[in-house]
Length: 126
Image (cartoon, rainbow, N blue to C red; front, side):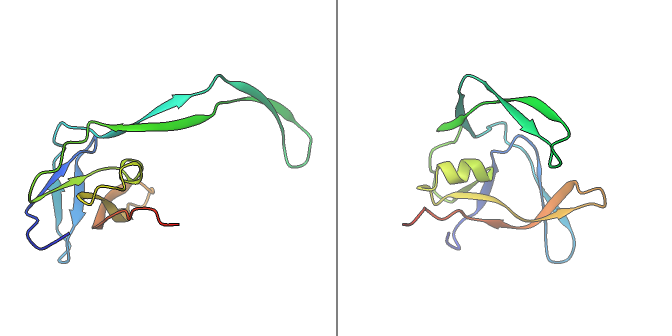
């Protein structure tokens, strides 16, 4: 990211609230574009799961999920950053114009009410 970045496009399915240094909340409205990661689910299998003490066993349906391509993400544009979910940013880590909500702030009930900054997701390294 450089200092020339001038606009954030919110590609989350909801508004985002950025809490700035003086305590104000700046709302980044949802743009109408929602970036998501396609997924495929396997046929279910049934697992028998016992409680820790072995007193009860229950049957639980389990599927395998495989992640696919990112959909709904706009192409690159000069001076633009795209606010996306961590899952989208991870799946598109080759893009350097994606940011995710960082340093989440929660209310007394544990509900996220905003974030104090933004994170970039680095491309994986081996």
